[in-house]
Amino acid sequence: MIMKCLGFIAILIAAPFWAGATAHAETLRVGKVVAQNFGFVPLNVGVDKGLFKSRGLDINEFDFAGGAKQQQALVAGNIDIAIGGGTDMGFIPKGSPMIAIAVITSSPKFMGFIAGDDPSLKTMADLKGKLVGVSTAGSLTKWLVDRLNLSQGWGAEGATPVAIGGALGTEVAALKTHQVAAFVDAPAIGYRLEGEQAGHLLFTADAYLKNFEVFVIYAANSLVAQNPDAIRRFLSGWFDAVQYMRGHKSETVEIARKITGFPKPVEEREYDLLMPEFSTSGKFDPAALESLAQSFVDLKVLPQKPDMAKLYTEKFLP
Image 1 (spheres, rainbow, N blue to C red):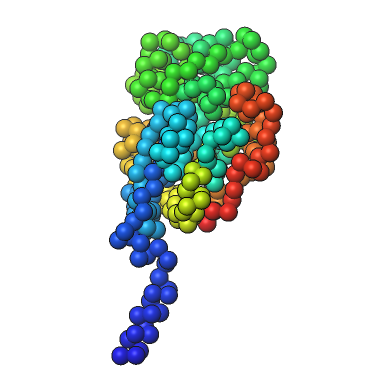
Image 2 (image 1 turned 90 degrees about the horizontal axis):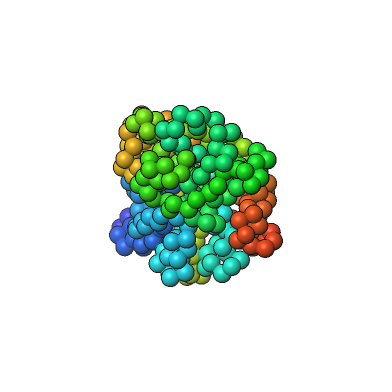
């Protein structure tokens, strides 16, 4: 009898600290800045494969059509975790109740310039003087257009960013009705339009930009104060999902397709393009942070570069 008791105690000690929590999982409200970007698919893979559930977490997902709406949800206390652009870090010095906790990717390859069926749009140079759709003012997509103009020396004659929202249907409608010549979003959208003979991917942003924290995970200050352990468990589940995705292409493609609705060949092309670019550590890169700080000034989000060390923490990383 004594030996049985000791054995039971040993099992309890050896079990993960969250094992007993799965029966009474905590709910985390997680917001994506947009639904369809492949950079955010680890959330859905983690949910589908039980990687968050095994850590005592239930995920309640919210999808926003741009950073402005996501910020409103944070201020209202409606989400606990925000998944969005690195440029959203610029809202923290202005009072946004959040802190950056992990990098999703530092590769601008996750963002593409998608053109319509205009046969004159074949290269980067063809965007000079054209209207290019972005999600909102002050967004990552807006900055990418501005940075394109700067990199090409186009000045006032460059591409003009036009806010059209981040919803896929709205973006494609703006393209097909020629409100814009192109828009900035996930490369797979270009692949899909190519299959429909309605457009194509012109180029990805890494063609002119290096070292930039493109996508970042944020935690609400209230969650940091009240339940920091939930943040650690969430990030542990996230990076386990990234590792799973690297070794399971077909399963990842099918999960991504449930979100995007893209045909299988399109999602397979996007997987091959972007999967190697995911961060497996979540650590922030100093050079990428410097580029990010400059973007805050360029977008007029902040009057000068902030102390970036105050905008993020790595203490929750697994």
